[in-house]
Amino acid sequence: MSERRSREPEDRLGGAIDGALHLLDRQILDSFDKMVGKVDDVELTEGPDGLEITGLLTGAAALLPRLGGRLGDTTVRHWRALKPAEPLRSHPWRVDMTDVDRLDSAVHLSVAREGVLRKDRERHRLGQLTAMEVVYPDGNRLGRVLDVRFRPADDGRLVLRSLIVGRGRPGTLLGYDRRGDQGPWLVRTVVRGLHRHTAITPAARAEIDWSAATVTLDHVPHDAPGHAFG
Image (cartoon, rainbow, N blue to C red):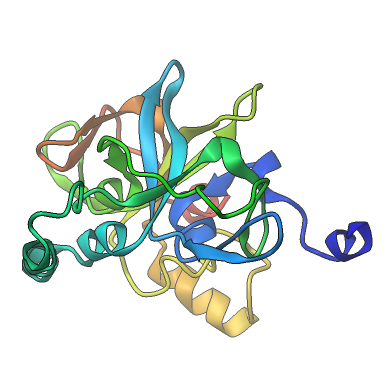
């Protein structure tokens, strides 16, 4: 087991991770490498240091709302109507972050899959946050939240530290817009050009209005490439 794990990529949980880029659609494997599901959304809970990742969500109730717009609303409504008497049908299955061991090309759990999936009360979701409009202090529109960056606290909790905001052009979730060494040079150059107005701004300087689906900044972030892709 130790030889197999030594060949795997480094555990990302020890450093900064971008929620959509590094978590969404990853397979979830239990301690015996058996399939549990895939990460369809991420649960966010307000903690002492701000929003933090408290669970990984899986299943249709987590995935369908990510479609967004009228299509998402209609699909979710019809899916719920299929079994209206099913308890907590609109609540997704969740894996508690305390059961997560490491993150590389998949999410690896420290426990067996039997009984690991649970349903709980609704909390905030990453999919809600990445769909939000971002506005300047004067109310003018900057773009939308493309991704969010978490960093581990001293006790290992993954706490929201930064918002990646911009105009949402192709390549947003491929990583080319954030790492200088990601992918072929030509593709990297083109995507970075498309994202030249993308900016990373501290979460502490943003007000998240969940009911209005809007993020208001208290400043105008730098949008030069050096700031956007640092």
